[in-house]
Image 1 (cartoon, rainbow, N blue to C red):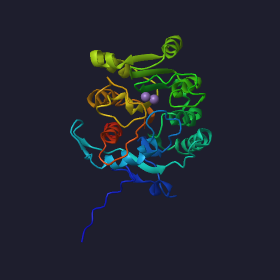
Image 2: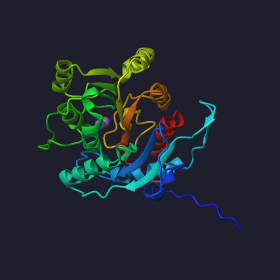
Image 3: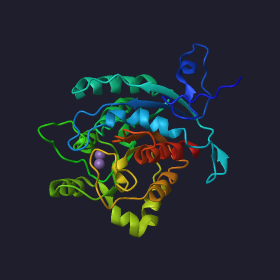
Image 4: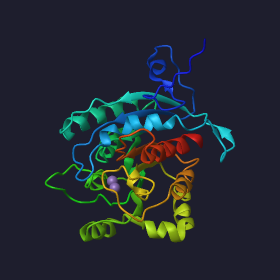
Length: 297
Ligand code: MN
Ligand code: MN
């Protein structure tokens, strides 16, 4: 008798991390390999909580994707390992951040992290973990988001989903490109201008996506990609911490993700997914972003 059993706590098509942990395991030279890491942390969410369920909901949703990619006319062949979820300390970003940073340091020589959130704050810890070896001073951060996340502090918190890009600015990446933004404070906009942070509003994506595709194509240094899934219109991603109307559609996001093909990517994350039921469209569209990224490897 044959049983078909999905492993909904693993991303579809991923390899088991026990293989990676095996002493005799050897990496294939010159082939990028990825590690999927869930970070179920949501302490500073101010509107809709629930991003702690994101990692498992996105993995579950990934089982509806098929290995053959009609766009690239090939099977998904990237090597990627499912690492499970980070042990987080709810209500304590400092502890969670330390744990995440050290986990990233542990894997980064061998695996490029693909992190599923969790609130956006965790991106800071991932980039901090990558900093020493990958030297993010040479790195462009591509930031998909409805929000700039450039506040100096939010509700008294220095580390928050609303301040995460400001904290990443403190780490001195080469540059930051924000795509799909449509909500911020006047101070955040002024800060972006003063610091030379490029930003493209969702209206600019709608009216001139070709120009943004060119901007991505012209990057010749390492790239870290952070996707706050609220960059999509709430029609396509209602289960997020801060739903904001007039966003991108999944096709526009996919076109821009596809422009990353052939680039040196040091990490990707998809954050702010707070789906809480099976088949929720937010987790389906989030799984699609990771699938699109892995399919073009
Ligand atoms: Mn956002
Ligand atoms: Mn964000």
